[in-house]
Length: 466
Image: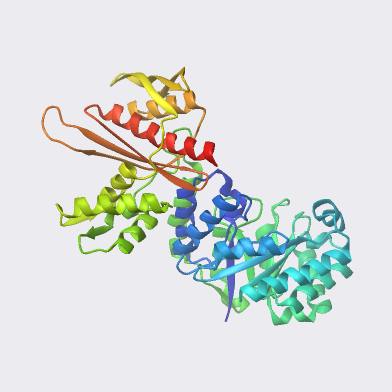
């Protein structure tokens, strides 16, 4: 039996509201579910988006990772440079095929678009063995132009060709006739994998996708979280139940579908009103180094934690590691985090904490009142939170006007006894880069505030000096 591949578009359609960490977690969940392809958003911000794509590519072990390239050679280069380390990379060329969209979105006439399709598809194929051409709005395209565009893509080296019912205006019977006509007028489609994407404007996306499979489609774009298109649990269930009769099978793990889709739904439905957005478990906590590890191994571990350090900071981290390694047999990932936060990326203070008042208790909502100085001018912020630290961080966001994704938050004791010192390390993510902050105090809330401000100062300094 032939395999029908599921190309998941959840990240592309609904990923805008997810944090960096949540996108990594989503990609891992989809990989565990066994979807054949995980589609990502393209590159808009070169630095931030390239880091996102590289991180997802390293996290995905089985699925193809697909990235659309901007419609220039430079766009192809940028997408490939971010994607090239994926275990199974795919480049996508997505172009409108209806006359209205071609002129409105690309400002090109049909002949110019055909030349662009040939050029960029061939350029993608030079770099990547797996290239997909996506004919957007194909069901409303001029038939002669659509035939020419699909032939151009196949001739230029596309290994998958996807046609889209972007408007979602077709019923299953109409879509069946559309597919039959395509195979009749474009015989070259039988030499490649044909995919389908259907809008759910008429609540017919799943039915149209099944119809396309019956007419020869072998790849379906679907979403694990509800979007305007084919719903992954529905199409997987139908193909698992009826696929044998169609002569096809689907690789998605349908037995794990309910649990996996439930976990994905929780990512999207979680509240995003606190500084802890995207904050989750630290997979690097298991990282262990010793005095026997050389400089390269230590710096590789620092890079694995997500830090991009300059030569001076690398020297400082290595020297601090060596000092600690003389006293300890092992240094874990959290301790390495603390080293980075303590000695790397040290900058002048843009923000200074003048004072803070925290009110909390069993019968009241935690409230924080902070006063912060910047360039000699003091500002105040007041916020309620789920706890004293949450309230303090929200007040800091209010007074500084900055919301940063918190990638990690650690609290540990430094000394013992009645006046024990507590250390807090935070990692904030801004512009695709991690910034560590560290605070020490007998008051753990105060340590947390100073750690957060320490990280904010690093962000502000880099923004002001670049």
